[in-house]
Amino acid sequence: MKKTKSILIFVLSALLTLSLAIFAACGGGTTSGSDGSGGSDTCEHKVTYVKPDISATCTTDGRGYLTCKDCGKKLSNEVTTIPAKGHNYVAGFCQNCKGEDPAHPNFYANAIDFTTLKTVNVSGQNIIANLLLGTLDENGEIISPEMLVKNIAIENGIVGATATDKEYFANIGIKAEGLANLTASLLVNDTLARAAVDKDGTVTNVRLDKSFIEELIKANAGDNQTGDNQQNFDPDQITQYIDLALGQLGTNKNKVLYNLSKYFFSAEEKTNEVVFTLDYDAIKRLNANLAAYSGKEFIDDLIGEKTFQTLSQAILSTISSPDLGLSDEEKQQITSIVNDLATKSVYELFATKDGKSANDIKKSVNDFIDKIKESLSVKIVSDKDGKIKSVAVTVANLNVTTIAKILYPEKNIQTALISGTITLTPSTETVSDDYADKIDELKNATDLGDNESKEADYTHETAETDGSEDDSTEEAAKPITTHYKIVNGNVVSVKTVYQFGEEYFSIECNRPLLVCSMIQQIDVGGDQPLTIKAISVLQFVTIPTGVAGDNGNDLLTASIKGDVTVRKATLGENGFVDGDVLEKIPVPSSALTRLQLISFTL
Image (cartoon, rainbow, N blue to C red; front, side, top):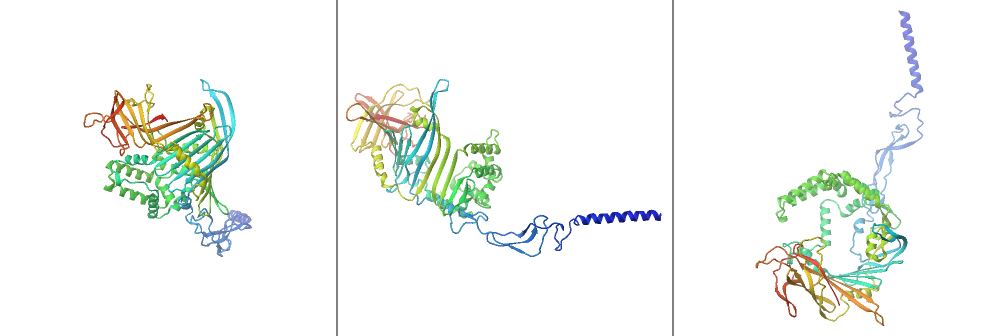
């Protein structure tokens, strides 16, 4: 027994000795260092760093301790100061703490501040058009295709304000090698919009009555907004409302624009400027967020924390106001949208009922981004304060076939791909005096070119029509004759007699909505070419309303402040004679009127 016990003690002693030897050879495993920290006694601690205990910010120091990067052992109890990072300002904001740059405040607000902007110059000298020409046979196959490469230049491109108050002018010339050269001009003031397109000597002029359109828009606002109570949109006032709302939310327009810009552009700080580049990866991140984040999360990230809560409470409180006059159904719809935004992603709200999900929408958007990212790039350059210096749009093989076919129908263009860069340069200067002659020329042309008064009748062709192009079953009113008055170059009255069924009606427009003239010069032999000026006037024509007036007859017309008057007409020996003015109905109403071009030749 004693012998057995001695053997057992010997074996246990040997095992214990062997274990200690192995333990020592392995460095003792994980033991505490001299400072009580973990680490390997065999590690030579060649690579060290200061492990932060308190991280440094842009403006305050942090602290940490010397630590081995290999084994993680804390090598010293002595506190090491981690210097403050300092701000890294790019485009008005620090890339670390997202704080605004005090040296360049309101960077993004300045970028969209157009109060000092007067003109924008347009240039494009390195534009290439790849054209595939050829006619199509009955099977749609191209006969004798020909590939052409053409150089295009943009000349005298400018958009902006003239020296005359509240008058704006645009001019652009397109010079295309081997194709018809184009020059287009536009002049807009308080009452008229004038435009002219010159295509190799054939000039088309258009004059649009701006105030007439404004009256249409006002009338469209409803019966409760007429006369002196009519509310107009004031851009400056809207801007003030936005600033006020953002201020109440505890944020500012500059910060919101900064957050928004990160979804579209990458910014690079240069010595004297900032360069923004359209960033498709950032756009894809935005696309992913719209699919993944709730409306609440997205709005709070864009504007600031608790923004959605503040906005939703304000909206739900506002819709209860009797001043808005909302029905219970409308209130419920708004409430439902607000509640959905709290939990659903933006794309979930737009998901269609045919089985598409938010991810389906995200995929469609990503597919579209992948298609255009190689063919479209945008580069914006600003100064250090955010003022835009230039905007360059570069395209590569952009398909403009439809536009090319309209501009050059005689060329049988089947495919047109454009490559090149168009640069827009803002300026605080008004349109230069160099354009004064062009402006006067445009005014004279759209005023029909003379100061004499004219009055004449024009008889329309009476060929039968095959009905309206929109397959409408409504009976069409056919123009028979047009009587026009031109005073001092202005079309002051156009009265057209229409045949409607077996009856005649005259529509007199004392201020035409649109006047279009085309001037062509034809060589007929001799010293002077023959000049032909064709005039088209856009005015109202009536259709049946199905609403009976006091006399039992269907109401056929409407009136806009007396500018359009419709009368019953009769055919006499010496032409058509106007009868009584028909009862009037407020316009606009698509069920009562349609627009029609009446054309005649001077």
